[in-house]
Length: 462
Image (tube, rainbow, N blue to C red; front, side):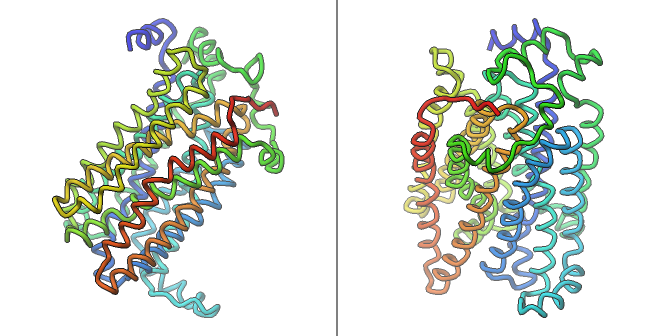
């Protein structure tokens, strides 16, 4: 840490201001995303949703997110990080607000769907529309954020910076149960969506004021030459930093998909993102089904759980530095760290067998598993900027995140069907045991696939 501080004092630390902006954007992203799952028990009771109804709403978001993120990465590589991020958060903030009008939207859309034979409750249709628009906007967050890290940080600092901004997901997940139930009880559930949605528009003002590319910030005097040189010091893809024209040059999806490195990231995300989506969307329902907790009662358990995941994200981002200090090159260090991280979720296997002792045992064990996911996420995103030039980073992140979104659809739909089946025969805990078992082993399977595809570090030149 002393070496870290001395580097910042010597060369400057404006890049960490940029990381702070990404942290707050990701916090807002997950706060907007989490409102519905916090209100799910109340809305399910109010509108008579089954587990499968809620799974349909969650799957609509996840499927559209998976498709949208593929194009969001290309869009951001084309238009640039500054404008692309602003567009993304504008769309998802607007989408968060329109959730408040879900019933009216459902009344308008349901007759159209019935013409083609799709019959769903009005409330389900309305929330599905809101989630679809939210997915389109939120799809831009991670491609833009990871591309920003690639632009502003040398390779040895990228996993830490990614871990820090990615921990914003946990802060958003903590803030939601602390605030949303109270807002909903005092002012109505619609107000919760409106207030949370408005926060994103405030962030855009700070983004446009403080963000630009390192080269432009150097020209404007916002960073010094030493920090600029440090940012570019580990650009192993070429001997000079990419120009703005280089960054906007398109590389075809066909070419990107020809690389094993792309498929390594694809399968790593496909196997593990569904786990995170499941816990994010289903934990409030789990606490209600297993321990009869809802509304403000779930605030403390979720706050404890997501506080743990914040620690995992930051520590996971730092972890490869331990191996780097032992002389390993960054990619090898990252893969060693990810193997250790992949073994930690095995503890989730104990959540159901020991859950009868106390509610806090599964909360702590799931918290450890979610913490490991965030540590994993901080590193798997960084493998992309390790191996691909900046101009392709957002596109690759889009491809992998699409895979993760599709995984989320599959896990959510399967979970909803399992829970309805086992709830019908009076053994819903068996459904949770099955899903938790998958969540526990997914990371080791993902690591083995990634290692087999890319056994050694090999940078890509486009």
